[in-house]
Length: 350
Ligand SMILES: Cc1cc2nc3c(=O)[nH]c(=O)nc-3n(C[C@H](O)[C@H](O)[C@H](O)COP(=O)(O)OP(=O)(O)OC[C@H]3O[C@@H](n4cnc5c(N)ncnc54)[C@H](O)[C@@H]3O)c2cc1C
Image (cartoon, rainbow, N blue to C red; front, top):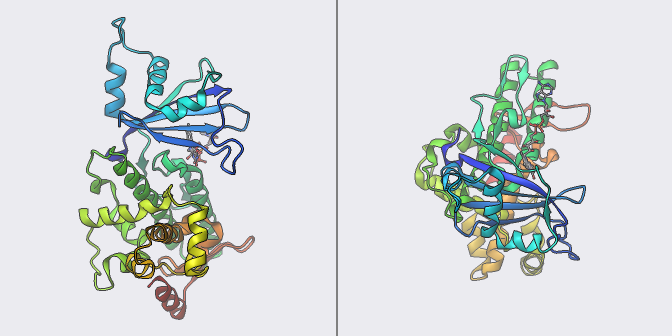
């Protein structure tokens, strides 16, 4: 269990809730907001059948305190009463519920203790993927895509093992590392956001796996710490730097207009996903005092690193543990990287 994300969610389903940004390109997007009493955050997500899921996430301590607080009638609230009470802290969601929104009776559910990680994700003749392997947090909805990343990694490492492209032990190690990296990166995005919302009251260093940390942020290392820093030691300062960097991933301020302006001013290449990571200093030098452009380019830098975890085709882009994934239907597997390819990839990272 990760202590820093020992959260509890309580959620329910509603009818006739208004859609966020109706009539715009963003219609049907989820709406997420921090609780105004700073105890957590909430989601409002439209569903396929016209109903809406509205949920609240709080650290277990805050949730227990609220659930244990007796009401005017001297009784502790039921789960439904506790749930409905949270609506007062989410003006945005309340506005979407409006006059007509109706909670579906009996639909309230809760789940707790869900940020965890297995000690390994593979063994002889098995791979573990999805929620069975690891779950970070519902924030940023990483669950499904990490499950798919893990499934692809499992498939190609099993194929590589069957075809004797690598020893089974190597295939296992590759899968463990790949899944570990995807989780570590998302862990940082989530922790960074929680810190920003003042929800991060627990030390997080103990929740970060040092081995995965280094692999997960290899691409960022030279641009944040400089090429001279080869130390793998994980410190509070490094964790903080990485969280600050990762926060750009979901920077809500960056919109299409900002991206368009950057494309016009600095060219298309800087916002292409295939371009190399620029790094904070290069970005600062390039944009000078253009704060909007800096946010756009910081976001694109982080997106490039995360695209490994999000885009199936990108999984075969960079070598991992000396092997590159073949991500082609019918040809899944692992191929040993020749020295030349490693050099090119290192140069790109720099
Ligand atoms: C309320 C809520 C909202 C969420 N919202 C999002 C979101 O917006 N975006 C997002 O990305 N993620 C979201 N998640 C997380 C996401 O649902 C999971 O991370 C994801 O479904 C994990 O996929 P999985 O295949 O590992 O597990 P699951 O989707 O849980 O699949 C496991 C399957 O195995 C079956 N099963 C279990 N035991 C057995 C057995 N013994 N024999 C046979 N079958 C069995 C189960 O019935 C289930 O169908 C949400 C989760 C919750 C609870």
